[in-house]
Amino acid sequence: MTTALIVHGGAGAWRPGSDDDAIAGTTAAVAAGRKILEAGGSALDAACAAAVVLEDNPIFNAGTGGVLNFDGFVELDACVMVSDKNQIGSVSGLQRVKNPILVARQVMEVTDHVMLTGEGAQRFARVMGHADHDPITAARRADWEQKKKTLEVGVGADGKGAMKIREFLRSHPEYAGGTIGAVALDANGVLCAATSTGGVTMKMVGRVGDTPLPGCGTYASKLAASSATGTGEYVIRSLACRQISDNVEKGMSLKAAIDAVLDGLGRDFDADVGFIGIDAQGNAVGAHRTPHMPHAWFSGNSEIIAKMRA
Ligand code: ASP
Image (spheres, rainbow, N blue to C red):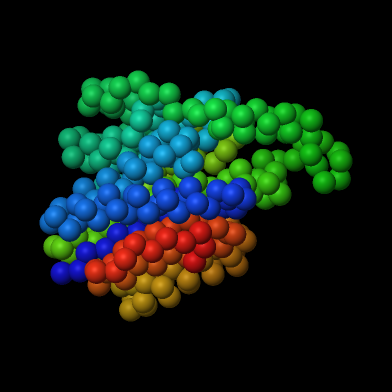
C-alpha cells in the first residue's frame, strides 16, 4: 500500500526572507517521517517524528519558539489522532515542555483520558519524564515586547486608542502563523493527524484554540485525516477537520472537501486559515486563505515537494 506524509508550518504572512528556512524546516520534517514509513513504521510514529522536528525548530510556533501569551509566557496545545479505533490524545495550556506532541501521544497511550490541561498536563508530562524546558526564544520575546508596546500606545486606524488584538493581527499578519501539523498514511492504511502550537499571539491566559480539540484543528477518520492552522476560533466554530472527513465520506475528493471547508470559512468569517490532509489513497493536499502556508509532502515514490503557498 502507498504511504504518504504532509506537514505544514502555519498559515499566515511569513516575514520576507524567511522562505528558505521554512522550506528547509518542513522538508526535514517530511524526511524524518518518511524514513519511518518506508521502514514499515506506523502513521502515528511518522506523524509524531515529523511534528517533533518542527516543534524543535524555533522558527515555528510550536514547542521551542511558541508565541507568548498576553502575560508573557508560553502555553502549548497539541493533539494526535489515529484513524484506527478513533484513538486521540491531547494537551492544552501545557507549560515548559519541549515536545507537547509526545505528551499528547502519551495521554492517548497510557491514560484513560483524551485530554489533559494546564497544571495537570504538566504534572503528567513530568511523570512521563519530560524535563523542564523553557520554550521562549529571544526572537519571540522581542516580538512580544514590541507588540505589547504597540498595543499600549494604541494603533487604532482612527487614532483613538488601542486596537483589539484581532484587528492588530490583521494589519500585522507577520505576527501570526507558525503552528505545525503532520498527517501520515502508513502501509496498513492507517491515517494519523498531529498538530502542535503555541496558539495565537497575545492570547488571554487560559485560551484554548482549535489545535487540541479533536474534529476542530485535528482529525483522522478511516477515509481522510487533516490538520488546521490559522485563527482557531473560526476553526472551532466550523468543526473544520471533522467536516473535511465528512465531505470525503460523502464522496468528495480530498481537494474538494478541503476547498468546500475553506470556502465556508471565507464566506462566514473571512477566516485566515489553512489545512493539510491525506486521504486513504495517499493523495496529499494543502490549501489556505492566507498569503503563505509553508508545507511539504511526499506520496508513494514521489520526491519531497515543499512550497510556501499552495
Ligand atoms: N490554530 C492555532 C490556534 O488558534 C494558531 C495557528 O495555527 O496559527 O491556536
